Image (cartoon, rainbow over all chains, first blue to last red):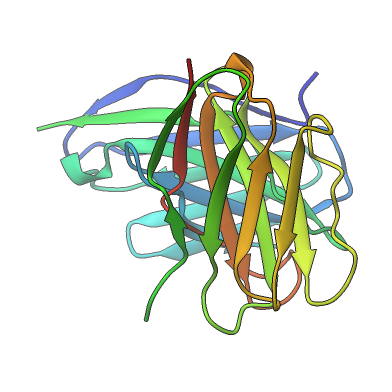
Length: 111
Length: 114
């Protein structure tokens, strides 16, 4: 079993819809939670970073962490075609240095 | 400012050849990471450098893989006697301090082993 599980998709939504993405993890030592966006043939870029349970909002993006369930989510409101990309969750331990990634979910926002 | 840069962007090589991949981290970042992204395995950690400390090599898949970081800046990942299963995108990231700080990724080097 992988340490971080993420549905690979693809997830296809119409423009303006809410995109809902999630990951589950198995190790309670993970303390920092990130979402990266990766466009085709580009490196991942950080979207959201949180370290506590609850919600964190940044513009159209909301990251949600539930440590008791070992479940993290990313919501994208008012989705745009430019949001079409692969979204990767990444988790790190408190004293760790390496990111452990989910497999990524490919999202397609149709105009 | 300048982000993480990697070269070459693409590399095609023949099985059995050695390859060197280069990473220039963001200026002032003391931590540098190498990851590999392949279709079957997703994004996997390879190696981590932090300042003058001994690197964390726990993610290197075999002794054919090695990396060095000269002068606390530029890093080179070397793969000896390449195999077809080494074909992947090799990503470099840097952060200002330790791992929990934001890691900024370069565009990657796409390696194809024929």
